[in-house]
Structures are given as C-alpha cells and as structure tokens.
Length: 520
Ligand code: GAP
Image (cartoon, rainbow, N blue to C red; front, side):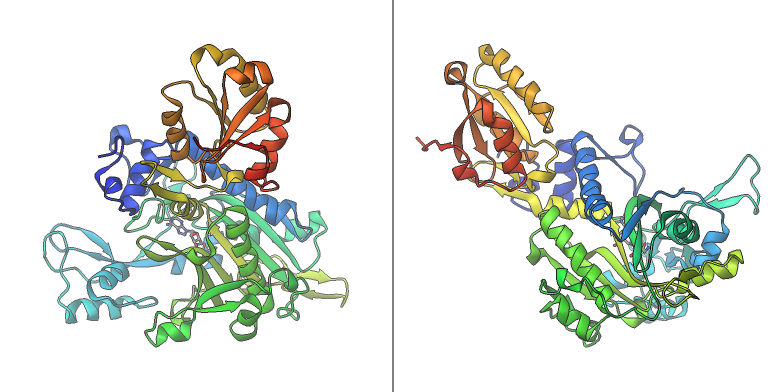
C-alpha cells in the first residue's frame, strides 16, 4: 500500500470522500473549527486552498471586469435593509420543502429524499404533492423508520438581529445571493459611473443559505461565495448581441428541457450560435459561451467534463423567464456549477415598487426612460468552481506511485519549487529561490531525496521544479522538471525567470524551452 494514502485512494477510487481527505491532507480545505467537531456546511480554506480560491476569483474579475469596457464592479454589504428581500421575493419564495420525522426529529430535504429513494425528479413540486408522494410510497425516516410529519416550506435565509434588541423590526437576513445588492445599487451606479446600456455590474462575495442537507463537501455549503454579473440591456434590444462573434463557434453538449421531459438523458453537441437560434436569446447564449471560455481557458477544465442543462419551466426561479446551468461531471454525477438566468425586468421593477424610487434608465438615443432588462445573470459559485478544478486536475499516477494534481500552471498555488541537490548547495539554491519568489509563488524544499520532493510537489500541483546541483555552482545552469511529463531541461540561471514566466503563461513549449536532458 502506498504510504500517505487513504484506502480509497489506494484502490484508485476518486469520490467526494477521497477528495475531502486529499484536500485536508494537502492543506487545501478543512472542516471549520474541527477542534470542536466542526459545523455542517461550513469549511475553511488552508494555505494552498486560500491561494487557489483567490486565483479563481482573480481570473474571473480580470476577465469579466478589468479586461472589459462594458462591465463595472461593486462590493456590497452582507446584511442590508430587510425590505431588499421582500422586494426580491426571497422572503416569500426562497424555500425548500422539509420533511421532519415524527419520532427522532430527523429532517430531510423532500426533493432529495424522493429523488434518492424513488428516482423521481420533483423540482417545482409544492408541499401538497410531496405529501401525496410520501403517503403513496410509504416513505419513512431513513434514520429510525418512523413516519414523517406533513411537509413544510423552510425559508433558507439565515436570520440575525441588528443592534442589541431582538425584535421583529430589528430582524435582518444574511444575503442568500449577491445579486440583489447589484439591483439595489443600480441607480447610484448609473448616476456615478457613466455606464451606457448594454452593460453589466459584477460582484464577488459571500452568500449564506441555511441548507437543510449540506452535502458533497464544498458542493452544497451553508456559507459560500458567489461571483455574479447582472447584464442589463435596452428592453427593446434583448435579442441581438453585437459581440456574439466572440463565442458563436464554441461547441458544447446541451441537455434540453424537451429531452428531460421525455425522460431522456441525451446530450447533443451544439455551437453557441445554434443554442441562440433554438433555445434562447443571443445575449443569454453569449454569456453562457463567455463563462464556458473562462472555465476552459483560465481554469483549464476539460471541455468534455462540461455541459449545459436547460431548466424545465416548472423549476424556474420566481424571477426567471429562462435559465441554463453549466454542469460539471463530478464522480457523484453531472451537477450545476453555474446558473445563468434571463431575469427580465423583474428585480428593478420590484425594487421600484417597494422603495418607491425611480430606478429607470434615461436612454440618450430615444430620450426616453426605460427599465433595463437583465438578459443574462451569470451566477458562479466560487466553491463549485474550486471543486471542479480539483476533480479535473486530480490524477492518480500509478507508475509514479503518487497523485499528480495537473492544475493549469497559471492557477497553481505554488508555481515553482526549488531544490538544492544536497544540503551543502543550499546557499546558491536559496539565493536563486529568493530571486524567483519575487515573481512567482515559490516553495523551497531541501528534505528527503529529490524523488520524494518531486512527489510532494506533484501532489500539490507545482508545475515546475528547479534543481540546483554541483554544475550550477560552476556553469550557472539548473534543471527544470515538468510535472505532467517528468521531462527535464537544462537552462541558464540568468534566463530562468523569463523561461518560467513563458512556461507558466503557456507562451513556451517545455521541450524546446531549454536543452533537453535525456532520460538515463
Ligand atoms: N443569483 C442567482 C443565484 O443565486 P443559484 O442558482 O441559486 O442562483 C448560483 O446560485 C450559483 O451559486 C450556483 O450555480 C452554485 O455555483 C452556487 N451555489 C448556490 N448554492 C450553493 C451552496 N449551497 N453551496 C455552494 N455553492 C452554491
């Protein structure tokens, strides 16, 4: 049995439990407050996880805010005026249906229980339909086999109190999505940022949902992070996207609502252009394509592990007229990692009604006031992107006898590891390391054999290891070893930073970036 591996890892099984153990062991993610037994649905990121998480967010912000002329950013508060959640509909509608055991008080999310025991999808079902299904199928508590109480709606928003006095007027909510802050700030952003339709407002931040059954590690948490854009267009121009050419040829599998209604799990590969012609508007399809490109180009996710799923009419959120998920092929099935709704003018209209403030936009061209239309709401969970990246990169290399985390070099939490071949070469190696550390996240490792050090670096996804040896002292060259191929090249220390920067950015081919060292 390989050392340092869990029994499942040794058996080559990659499931969510193996990933949870791996992430803990390598310093990516831990149960929160584990010394006290943890808290279900809450997780902490360790040194490597915090780096990777920040990088995921940084790539998103750069691509969708900094590199664009038509999106501006904001950062709203987690607690806001409770009217925000009345206006948005969350106070009345943001609920799952819960089943509670009459005897042991065990609580289950009704749709999940029915799906796992009866294999039935019950998105959009009301409590009455759930009760009928529970009674007809004699469903019992999985813990103690007693009957359930009547199914009840359970609002997922976490409540808190503003100030020292607990009272109905002082009750507030932790935001269940970042999006509403974009709507409530819409007017002030228009007035202060010189934005012109079509434009988007983007935000990254924490969101909280009191999930009935948090599960699957980072997949369903009670505290998580979202990266959201509300993309506003003129209500008379919701169809045509002038920048559609950027994404139109991208191909992706799609599970349509028609196929799902017919009970078929068949996926057809289509271009984004075909999707816009058949299933939704150009703007909506454009944003699905733009996000898919981020997953593939920035995060390095394999395209075959991504697909689109069209929402059934019965499962659409109260604010949406159409919605597509981007799903990732996890070991526990194809699951949503991104949601993208056509949100119409619903939210701005609601906030106008509840705040009695005019949130319309003055269109210079027509000299008319309009309520902008949210043609797309790319809504991304940071944690689910993180989890998809980890599963996609995880590779159990039987020949090497260790895990190789094949992260795209540009997002690896440690991009370069520096090894002195023997300890007496440490001074030279350290001076090179200090120089590299000013440019890349670097790690210095002097313990154990070089083979052991390569294995440790592979497991945390370090793409390039640089070994300083006896020849380095005289000819001022070093060896770089490539994580994915284990190929090695010899390069001058003087050019090392440029070579590594080119390799990490994908501008250079490893085999031609230096003098190839033949395997002995
Ligand atoms: N503003 C729209 C909105 O919040 P959503 O589909 O409920 O839509 C969007 O959530 C994304 O947020 C999901 O695709 C997922 O990536 C992430 N997300 C939602 N609930 C989550 C949870 N409990 N744990 C982790 N991520 C979650």
